[in-house]
Length: 358
Ligand code: IPM
Ligand code: MG
Image (cartoon, rainbow, N blue to C red; front, side, top):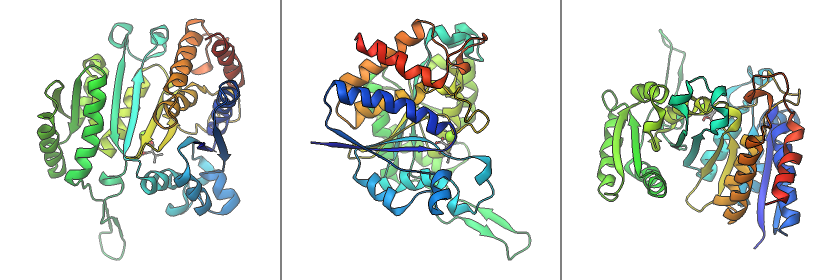
């Protein structure tokens, strides 16, 4: 059956890194005669400029019918003052919510050759290999009621952090299952010392732990996890967390690995449909210079091949090519301290050479 892939490059370096991933995808389509079709649309600020909104109904409809979505990045200073509901980030939140992409997998791993690019000392960071499983369609990001009340003094604003037991169970299940295929360790992160919703979360995850006796389950407070990720990141295998805490912890974890420009992510729903995006954002400060590192986007394509496109074999090939690429000493600007580095557009052709030999 034909697989449909929606390409949403977005803004800033999103466009540049997506172009590189497309070179790899097109190469694979041709070489392996893949029955894939790709459709490209604007999203975020780019869509706002064309259509007056960051995500059009048409694009959302195509997204619903696609097996996988490759998402670059959205946002930029020129759209920072827009009304709330047309800001570029709303495209991302709208896609996540509408497609029910509740499970966000954010791996953080280190190629040991890049240890010197990490802000941490080499011995702390070597062999880093963590998976953060972040809940993505609930919690304080989407909780109701929410709002801003301006007709009283003092004015106030509020959000609601809410999880029901089903939402907790389904994300915990993804995390337990992931732990079973990895190091069989799961750390659930919450603020159970302060928040009812966290205490409830902890109880449900603990109860589910009984179904997975082989998984060593622990619970940690989010502030402590932030500290432990920096002190001793290798204590973790899989971390599961709510939308907000997962957002914060995954940025810390990504930074440990040397460059946020290296790390992919997948956001999945219960029918295997997924959106795949690099952990980094649109990086307006370096956009247009051709120096962005496209490896996170290319790794995200690998995750799409594995989780939504039934071609884990090709995902493995891409990952191996990236490993060899790093091993050969190829470096984009973000992962080198020396003057010499290769540019965004140099990466895909070098990877394709490596893929040819696999
Ligand atoms: C992320 C981002 C988004 C989030 C923003 C851009 C809405 O930080 O994917 O981590 O907070 O989820
Ligand atoms: Mg974030």
